[in-house]
Image (cartoon, rainbow, N blue to C red; front, side, top):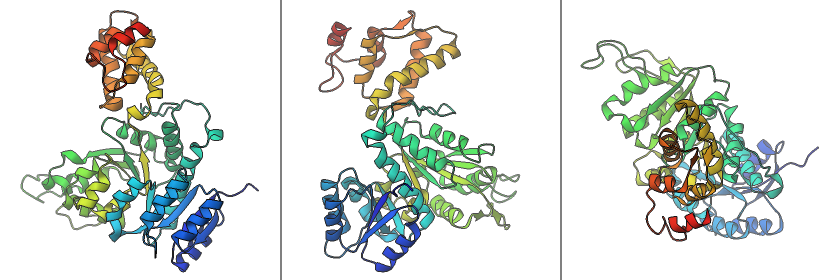
Length: 409
């Protein structure tokens, strides 16, 4: 029998320590301690991939334990155990290196999923378990690459796709969150069922209820016929709530109720409708700050982030640029009837120095434009310079200027 992965629980509640040990002992080698000092002493002697850390400990609080733990065992994945009312500590804990949060009382199935995702993240950082592979997903998701960040994302997605867990996709604008959501749906057991997308940023407060839950004829002025909302259309399938942080507070309350009860009523209706929908929400990295500011409900935040997936910006995965460019050249050659053969080494180097504020979306638009307009068989350095608008001395400190790049060609 293979050795079980180790998890350390640091919590002063003996009942919780015992309950977690009983619930996890078939899958994990569970070690428990009652104080931060005991936990740090244990970690000084043992290598532990995952730690469950109570945010409210006697003598030394959870944030201080986290700070000291990360100073000694930086690779260890730390999941904070926190109550809903302790949301103010979310942002500082993330800044100190916490990977995730688990609310108390603990839902064991949710915890199991998060522990295995944390273990996968830890294992991906170990040199012996980093095969050189290229991953790609259906639906044009651009989950393509050899970088550790993309291998980590791939592993997490593979684990969560086969479950029904709610997923929160976190990433900057243009990183491909919507495409990743489609890829997740395409790999799930719901792949043949509806996939419905709602852009929360474009929802006026007055139309939130009608858009999400539908309305009956005569429910309000202008409601001339029954309208079926997003939840009803996505029944048995997947609903993507894009830019969830922009959802008005009135919509947040209604959404929380559906997530809790799996039922809703159309606006102006009296019949309660049960619904079976897998929720995927997408957001930029500022959602915890919105929670701390009081503009996004903490209870909804925790409901949505059962499994968080972080999509790295392109500047954090520059080594994937050659693969992405090759993929896009092939795609747009076929779409535009072109035969562009590739890109010169100097031009690729220039792409590698660019900061990519628009991420994958910006790269996609750039390659589409170059394929459509390029008159030669290769994309040259000068073409990239013109397309990206290189200033005379490069984009940032340490970036080669176009002249130096040209000499290296």
